[in-house]
Length: 393
Image 1 (cartoon, rainbow, N blue to C red):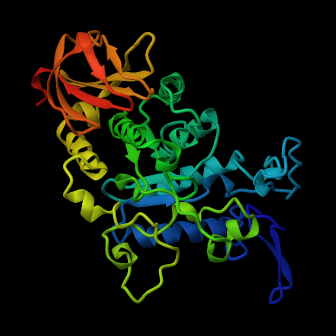
Image 2 (image 1 turned 60 degrees about the vertical axis):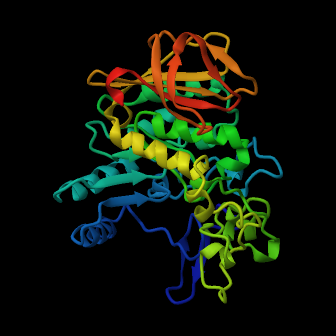
């Protein structure tokens, strides 16, 4: 089991064991049984008929197990302190070829309904395997979730640029990309980056080609909260101390009042509220013209206004000798330049490959707009800028 212990549980009523890859309360269905599959597709139809726009499928690659239920081999690379689930090499329980058959069937169920319906799959897989979930005829998932940014250990241009290139190059023709910066299973991005680079990371997320996915609270810079062992709620953290996910799951910080406005004053929240909620909250940041939330809202507004950002192509720029990720987004003659300094030093760059001059529409520091000479573009440490050309404003 992911949190430790046996994945087989004895059931007194039936006199049988059942399999649970995750918690004991989450029995695995036998997706090899046609009746079980059809029953699950009926559940999808139930919700689709009520107008839902689609489904996020959790732990999708684990649906099918080895037909002979063979034991996974031990992982010789496992060391004490590593997650308990990593003690096995999951060759018989994860990402079996038959999972793709189920994905195609789910897509067929979804496509039978009018309107735009989306299938999103949670998949922690190598890039070449992730791409197979789009389907051979793009008849699989609309969005196999791309966790490359979550798993990125070094936030430097030398790592970011090649990562984007690998992902873009691996996409099947016609497949729509996506990027995920934070989720409920990993430490918050504000814990992994300083304040300035966190803002630059969100400009990256909201200006790359594809669908961006942001985790609640990241838009105001919420951080992980230290949870005492006696208050941990995550079964994984209870069973495998040190591997819990609760620090990134604390109440949303809406305001400076009791419980950060998440629940009534006399109600104890499921998890403790962060100590910084009186200053880091939505209410405060709404009134601050340079806040993280204001930056986030500005970038979303620009995505909606500029087709180059929402559906345009992606072209990286080669900036020699600088820790800057720079790229162009283009559509229908509209061009937008994004330049992000993930380094610790100020950079004066020649970005004239994109053009001679432009108009700064947004800076992550939220303190400058207006004309920019691209031959001498000044970027402060951790700063990102979004620059338009000609007809974009």
